Length: 138
Length: 472
Image (tube, rainbow over all chains, first blue to last red; front, side, top):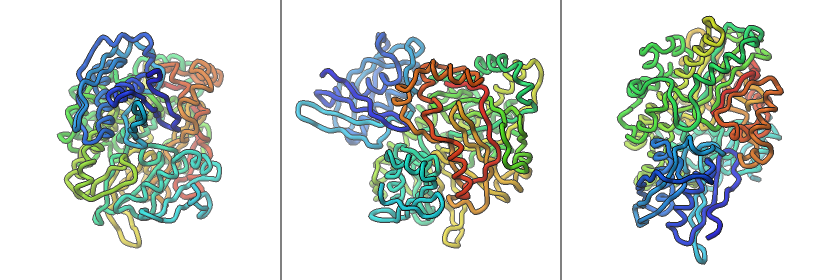
């Protein structure tokens, strides 16, 4: 799919719609959106990989948990992630990985994200794919 | 939203309907109200009115804008004994984000010749930006989580006067550090004494105009005085704590039979295990935030002394949070009640005589700190008796423009040049981020303050303009 995500206007915070052929791809592209809005990822190697595991009862809860886990991992490891893979997405849990570069190696282009929120959250199946809308607190 | 109607001078009300338990009430001039109506902030005021146990109204301050769950500028009080809830979304991810104002014995004329030297020292002394940096070691953190800024004073950082002039004495009651997740403590460990990024800042300001001489003198402010304003919060530790509790409250809400119109309004009764756990973790996060601002203030004093080459008196004027839920007693329907007052982007503003004020402020009321955007002005107001919104006032100018829109309007470099042409020295952590926080992205802070005055939220005392900005 050509377009991975689209930024949406929000007065104080940030929001996006991520696309994907599969739900797994939507999770990967949502993660990409969250970091691409903050860092210039064009020169990123994504060479430092980290496992990412999150749980939640619904696809929406899982998506927020996955994004928030990536934020925590990014902050504690000092990594800006640019590559993502979802290995397993099932009821109750998601398992995957993220590849990043040290944050001081990539130019900052947007305000850092505090958290992914549940506000206005949506995951929708469309013909030939999915999309998800996420509002971030910045 | 059409259901809001004028209900007095600069007051707009939406009567309770549907699942609303109380009306929605917005304090705003016509211009500010129209701005709020352009996005989804008013819908959020209505949503908050659905919270179980909410009393009087779902309020919004004059700087209201679209948030996530609660509007920014939202105030909601729930009656604890009547099943009232606590909502982590009503506090926000940046728990105890707030503002600290430090005075000085310097006038702007004293500082001008040495401003560049002071700014260079601040640039080096104030850790900011992404996650990184800490002005002090990690060993303090556990004591700080339990006792807040008091722990920092005991470790030799700052003075007891700093504690007297801080809301709650800089130390939240009921803090339970053991209820914080390992992840939260891990995120906070390296961040104590750091500013962060986004709209957080440290500004060197000058008292440009005093409009209430008596109150200004009582607060310790005079025209021409150099001040420093610090805006920041509990960093990753607070973000993680909110994330943890919003998540765990999903299933808990089902158990308590609570339904809310927005999942981000997740809430549980104050008098429940989950409610108590959140409040204990929130208080520990608040302690982190108060100690964080306290440590940054002490680093600021050191930078001033080094830049000036002599010691400087820089007493704390006040420190107050604008993202917090507090258990407070208020009279509702002529009966004193214990309420859980959520202020999400709203400053606590208690009037003269309030028992929580230190002796030297009791006759005047609490200093209410309202930062504006970096090129314009900030205000100090005073708390008044009879505040109509559970002793709350605005917390800033309020955003008028999205970050994407602001970035399109001009580059960070242009914003930097504009500020410097106005004799404002800027030390950005990242030049490109400056445009997101450009003055044109915010509403008129003078208008917000004027509305606070006419609606009895707080009375204007002094206007401060920036001469130096340190940003993340």
